[in-house]
Amino acid sequence: MTHLVLREEGSVRFYAPDVSKYGSIYAAPVFYNPAMERNRTLSVLLLKAYGSIYGGGLSVCEPLSGTGVRGMRYAVESGVVGRLVLNDISKEAVETIKMNLELSGIDAEVYNEDANALLYRLAGACDFVDIDPFGSPAPFMHAAFRALRDEGLICVTATDTAVLTGKHPRKCLRRYGSAVRRTPFYIEVGLRVLIGYVARVAASEDFQVQPLIAYWEGHYFRVCARAVRGARDADDALGQVAYIEYRRGERRVVNRPGERSLGPLWVGPLGDPAVVRKMAEHGPHRDFLLLLEEEYSAHVPWYYRVPEFAVEGRSVRLKEALAALRGAGIYAVRTHAASDGFKAEASYGEVRRALFM
Ligand SMILES: C[S@@+](CC[C@H](N)C(=O)[O-])C[C@H]1O[C@@H](n2cnc3c(N)ncnc32)[C@H](O)[C@@H]1O
Image (tube, rainbow, N blue to C red; front, side):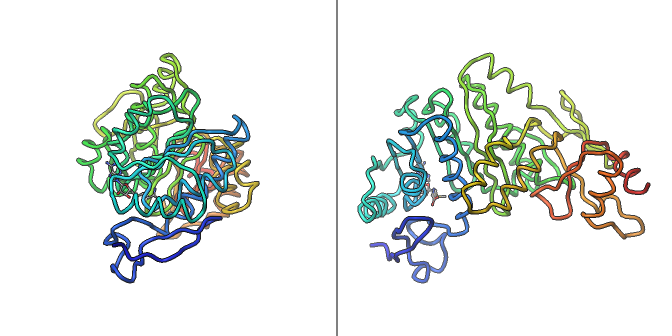
């Protein structure tokens, strides 16, 4: 029997393991991580925004459900869910999901099987598939696209941030097929390796992905994208998968891998500023969303950090750097990935000159 406590998140009340009985969330028989609240809340806001554009009655599948809190929040808070499919490979999790659905009077199909088996069976029936696994989403990506309808929405969480950001380069090569190493902009590299991987799997399933929101929050990366079916569209998306060469501060996009390049990774937009603005209208995490909107308006697949331009160990403050760049006519914005980082539509040399003008 699982020791449970009643919790609240967003507009739902639900049972989750009593962590005091297990010592940590990872030791509990059913997984619930309160630190993923922003991940779930932003996903609710996105689904709501998506539904307001494409209409309601959506089929939503969350094949790695844990307690079911995420799917339940989609049903209760987005107002656009028609069919809800929840699933977990763990029997204890499924018992908890059923108890939680009953508590809130939510209707859902609940399965106790391997996520991939379920997704392949759903074959094109889902408007929204949310892959929220332990660690890497890679093992579920092909099946996720099989379950998705044309113009569907796909969201993916990756908590293997150390792999994606270059701490374990060989594992990144195995898991995502990308070469990574540490750079000043390693957070964005990790996010773009993940999107690049999603885009390549999507293309192999004849889908083009168009990222709507992608971000990092310390312990995870999250990307949500619209997926359009079509071989030619998929080819177009692959045109946004390339490499970054990083040498002595300078960064540049190249189409072929070199000895010192990073990638393949996504070099297209990280998100859609209009969608993120719409999400911000609804309230929670507004400042974060407005920061993403600002960041997505700059069209460069990296950021700079002010210490990169330090002289005798002293660097200017971010605010001053942005003012100097804008004064020099360079488009520059903040990034959510580093408090001392900025995106500038200019080369390293041009930024340096602008900062010391
Ligand atoms: C990170 S937790 C999900 C958390 C949940 N989405 C949330 O927002 O609270 C991942 C879940 O996937 C389940 N799981 C792991 N491998 C699975 C598989 N192959 N098929 C189905 N479920 C699986 C685990 O039992 C666990 O409950």
